[in-house]
Structure formats: structure tokens, C-alpha cells
Length: 248
Image (cartoon, rainbow, N blue to C red; front, side, top):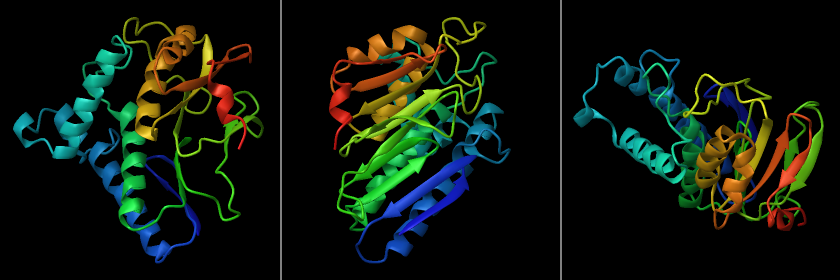
């Protein structure tokens, strides 16, 4: 069973293969994503993050989910030498660079808890997979061509790993280098990271993109991670172990 909806300002797709009560599980996953959007959306005046940015909520009243995301953000900031930072130049907080992967990871765990082991969850290009497809094959993920968006430049088989892509070709220049926020990131257009799970892949994909051309070198040095980067000329560079994801 496969269904797609628009939540958190992006398309979200959930597919469950086999198992009992797949429709119920899919509804639970979409309800979870809706709750995440209500808490973390910087576009909703009533969200918790908006209340925090307006100074209307004290630290001791932050939800456990907010505290968890903030802790992950701080951890990623340290691990990326400050290239990941949820504090925007105007001083407001925007955790969207980590919330998406975190939410997909939690949605996947929810499906496990509901007894499902064969599934695919995608939100805005970040993906968690488990088990096999309805045709008993490995799940495959297409890396979109940044300049011709109806084309796929590579098909990868994550084999249960998490996949996250950061780039400017879909949402425009929404990522910046915290060390030089006034400079436009233009050297690369996308970087796709494959990691132990979608949360890990997502948080480091955002940091790597902010590093520009050095992002692929950063991922190369991370144990358990691989990446595929496309620069502004359309030239691709991959890490040394990325090829293992190119075959089923």
C-alpha cells in the first residue's frame, strides 16, 4: 500500500509492503508528520518554535521533542566545525535542517513498532527504507538531475541505510555557510549522503552542503558515510565507497 500527501511544505510518501493494518499504520505516520509540522514549523505562528523565537516560552517549558532536536543540532554543530547551525543571521532559530531527517527516522521506528518490516518513507527527498519491495527486490532511490528535474542521474540501492540530499535546485538558496552568511553558496548544487540512518544522513548532508566543494571531503572522512556531489557545472564527484550503493 502506497500513499502520498503534502505535509511540512513538501511531498511525503509512505509505502508498506505486506503486514496487517497497513492503512492504519500509514495514517499513524501521516498524523505524526502533521504533529511535527505543528511543533516545528517556522511558518506557523502557533508552533512551539515560533513561540520560542518570540520569547513567549521559557527553556524549562520546552517540549522533550524540542530539547532533543536542539541537542542533536548542537551535536552536529560541534561535529561539523560549526558548518551546521540552526541560529540564523537574524538570531532566530530554525531547526528545519535537522527536523526532516529526525521525523523520518522516528516515523520508520513507528512502523517497526507497529510490526512492519518492509517499507519506504520519503519526505522531500530524504528516505528511510526497510526490507524489500512488493516485487521482493531491494528498494531503489533515484538521485535527481539538478538541471533537468525530470531526469535521474544515478539510481542507488541503500540496503536499509538512510539517504538525504541537500541542495539549492528545488528550494533555492535556503542553506548558508554560518562562517560567511553573506556569501552565496554557488559552487555545488546538490550533495546526496548515505549514512547509517536517515537522521544521520540528513544532519551531515546539510553541513556538507554548507561547506561547498569541501563537503565531499568531509563526508569521505566520516566512518559509515558516503556521498555523491554535483557541482554548478554538472560534474559529479563521489566518495571512495559510494559505488557499493550502485548495485542491488
